[in-house]
Amino acid sequence: MPNNGLNIRIAAPLMMVAVLLVALLVSSGCYNSKTGEVKVGGAISFELPVFPETGSHAVQIFSEMHYSPAYRSQEVPRILPPEGSVPVTGAEVKIFDIEALKSLSIQDHMANYNGSQAAKTYAVNCQVCHGQSLQGDGLITTLNSARNDGSKAYSGAAPVNLISERVSDLSDGEIFGYITWGGRPGLAAAARGKDSTAIMPQFGYLLTEEQRWQLVQYIRDQNK
Image (cartoon, rainbow, N blue to C red; front, side, top):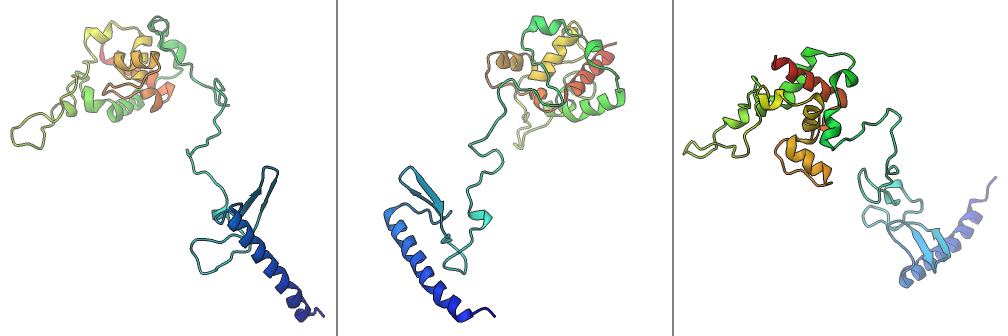
């Protein structure tokens, strides 16, 4: 049969020693009360019971996970993949040079074209600016402001007419590049490693490479 009285008599002095040790370390500045981590000099490091700032227990003998050092998603320090590394699913080659973009063609980058899916992609991402007819007369350009003078709410640059000669004369790769990087201003900014100030989003971060090539074909079809 275990001798509980003996165990209590042994445990009490040990607990007293632990409390005195923690008090000594706290006074010397070597003890972190939030994590229980103790650092003495540069060579000794160990953990002691934690004194939480809140809670019903004055001393927490077993450290809980929420008192351990941790980093939330996207919180520094982040361990990022090495520069130039490629995901197992493959990586898109980023092209900023306009001459290199001109050499790209739909046939080399799109296996199957789904017109209805491309139309949905356009409606969700492009129609608000370029319009249902692709003529640059989207809803954003016709909304009135909340003021009583009837002034327009949108005062930015006019969206491009996607069925104009300005677009139809472009190569497949140029259209793809402008969709990817947010128009001519966005492409120029990306080539310089700068953030784009253009109103058009850089869809390279929002749509897959396949979806952007589908949009190129969709624009081509509307220009016929």
